[in-house]
Length: 113
Length: 115
Image 1 (cartoon, one colour):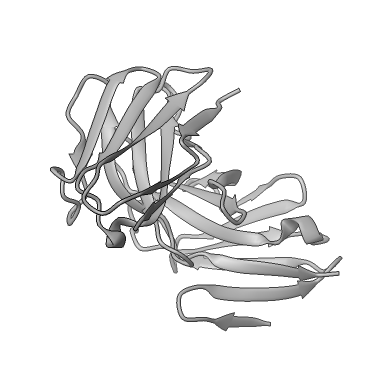
Image 2: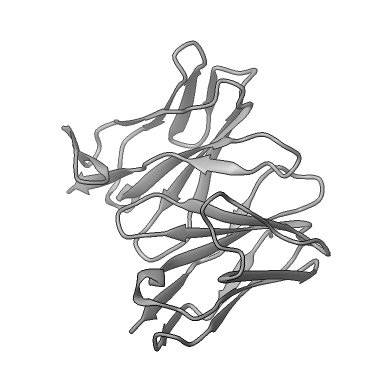
């Protein structure tokens, strides 16, 4: 199940299950959103992105859903594998010509074999 | 393609000394580079944005005299932590963006420990 720790929400799933990681973003004017995967001691790794003129985008085993009405983003991972265990962050483009990103809190996904 | 490297990957320094971290885009020209700081079990916090040849723009609460950023070329940005203190111990991550893409490519991070 999902729980909120001191700093980082956690999600624990069984191998082969589907995972859903949620994110609430802050700026209603944000037009671009990205999901990143971060393994321990490493930099963030791009997973999938979506622009605000879309509400769904699919990649390989991953799907991102965007609900602008409630400012909510979700990442669905199909057939979760132990290698998917990591911290997942959503990020939104804060606007401006530099495309600054504002990161969400992150969710620690643990996949049990 | 779109590889960003950081050097060093980890560094230990004594309180009061300065340490420089390098961020390089290896196969593209990075017109904009970003520096983030990440404390354990927390998210990435943007420290500053730097455009090649211009002064860096710092986020609110980040001391520009303490965290010196230089972006002198299209492939290299440096972050110097001056007069480091134990509370500066953190994971510092850079990212880079090319001139036509909005996507940021992240480096592997540098673990700084100040003793």
